[in-house]
Each structure stands twice: as C-alpha cells, then as structure tokens.
Image (cartoon, rainbow, N blue to C red):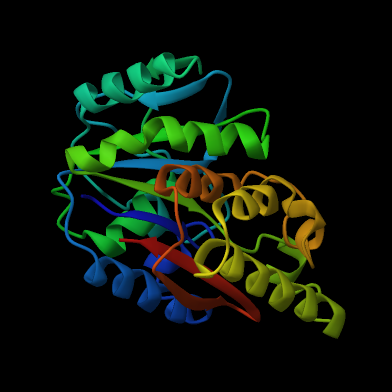
Length: 264
C-alpha cells in the first residue's frame, strides 16, 4: 500500500536555492520522504494547475514549467527529468469517470513548480514516474474530497498520492509584509486546526469531512487561505486516505508555521 502525503512546497524555487527561510521546510520534506517507502509511481495534485474538468498530464517525458518570476537565473535552469506515465493518467481518468467525475488528459503540459520543487528534494534521482493532476477550477472543498475518494484504489497499485500546496498561504505574512501578533496568532490557530482535523485519533470520519468541507469556519481559516487553491490538494489527500493521518511534519517559511502531513 503506497502512502498519501500533503506537502507545503514553499515559495517558488526557493527551497532549491538554499534560501535561509526555507531550510526548516526543506528538512521536513526530506524527513517525510525518508519516513515513507518509495512508491512505484506518483500522482501529484498541484495547487498551481486549475482546470475544469480536472486534468492529468499524459506526456511520457514531461518538460518543466518555470511558473514564477523575479528569481535568480539559476531558478530557470533547474532540471527534474522524471518520466511521465501515460498509463497512470489514463487509469486515474477512468477512476474519476466511474465515479461520475469528468476528467481529461493533457498530453502536452509539463510539470509546474508545485511538482518539481518538492520532488527534487524528496526523490533527487528523478527515477519515480510522475503524473501531475490539476485541482478543480471550482475550488469546492467537497468536490476535492470526492476526487480523492475516487482515486483511492491507486494506493493498492503502488501509486503514492501527493497533494502539493501550502498549509498556510497568506502572502502578506509569507512575504514579511504582515508580522503582527494577530497575523501570527491566526497562522498558529489554523495550523493547530488542520493538524487536529487530519491527524486527531478520536475524530470520527463524518466530523473530519464536515470540518474539511467548512474549513473557512476554522480559527484563522479565511486568513490562512484568502484563496483556496493551496488547500484543495489536502482535501484530495484526505478523501483518498479515508482516515486520519499518521504523522505531521512541522516546518517554517520565514515567520510562518507550515505543515506537511503523511498517511502511511
């Protein structure tokens, strides 16, 4: 049985450029990879691709998309030559079709930084086949849980399901423009809520689903995620897991607390 993980992937390419504010996050991603068995393949849901219907990459040798700007030249020469796996894209699409969830396969799209940045840290040899999955453009929480539930059979086939986003994504805080006590308190409150929601042993499945579907009502919820896209991969993971997470890996981006979560 392959693992499921929700990752905070950091700010653009900075985790790969030895940026001091990302070192703790880099260590947490490496620790997560070391704690889980290497899968046969990876299906990675990236916050940086929105589509309706949901789409999967289908190229056997995907290129990289440098979907960021204003970084040092080295950020645009990064390489991650992991193979694609068109058969996995087709299988994932079929699972969604069976569940009444329309999907498509994009045979030309490459891998965005939500994919190649964390995987460069976790699997630097780039020898595990990867298929990227978009989030649904509706950014609806319950829809993303249903997507995960439909994709759950992939685990038994040796496919790790990874959600790549950020547990906290208020850019004013992450970029240092807001370091107020209220902002940092909201950050901590939402991180605590997310940890409890995903990993608390005593939480019933129905309550976990309710909390996730209504995440904006959580302490610090709307502040932590002014827009939903970086949280939606977590809901896909929770839906696919069908139970609580086993471990939470704490990290930091600048002054903000962030988390990555492992179901193993």
